[in-house]
Length: 360
Image (cartoon, rainbow, N blue to C red):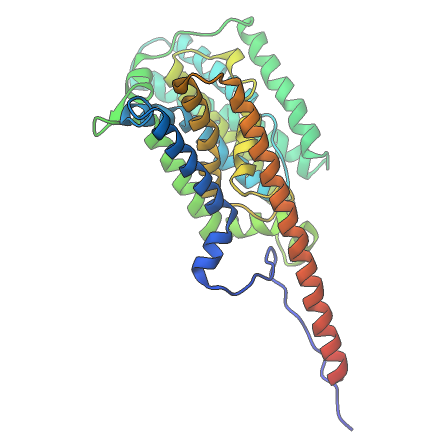
């Protein structure tokens, strides 16, 4: 009597069946690469329209510097959206961290690195505290991320206004502004951009080459499956939101260094701009898919549009229209791809089932 051996299928978390067309085919189909082509096309268009003003290193340097703080925030937001979460509070946490840091440095007095170092640590610690608060409520109290971070958005901004009476703190140690805010590396590259690049590179390495990054993708692909294979989902979610909060604290001190003030009213659109950039760069709002490279590319599209519109005399309000259109298109493409992938996986599993049944 023939024995029937049970057939098992192993499915990797966060993977989908993709057509085998080689590296070049996969690259051309990657949303981050397609967005990069869009960015290149936008840059070339503005270079043709304003070669004497837009196509200058001094202008590109300004664009890079303006996008640096958002890039730091974008790293944390990429991790969160990959887990199928959201963080609406990063702009307010940036403001709160900067306010607390500026007030501490003002009380200590002095313009040297001793006071500045304490201010940096205070800003990062403030961001981490808000991240822990968000992560604990989301992971342990099971409150949806949208509600938690919407609440902390108002709380952090309100507390910052209470602490300052709504008046910006302008006493920032000169060493921060001269070294970080207006400093240069090799005479031409903004120091603040180099710092942002370090966080981007480290964030990308951790996301794509470590177990922490793998677990991030796993949680976003299927929280239930991640739990079944041993991922401590609650602890990981707390860690991811804490990471985002800590990076908002870093952005808070960078903002102080760049603007020499807390800019309480200047970060109202920061959270939406960062979320838009992450999604435009190919990170799926449904979780389980995304790259830091895509986020960086997504950040530069609105930055280039705003700069180019100003130089060419177009009303900068058109930037919002253009970015909104690109955002909707990116989400639509992501949804179409996921639907096609699910359909392909279903058909593949059905063929395997039928084939196995016939052999049995």
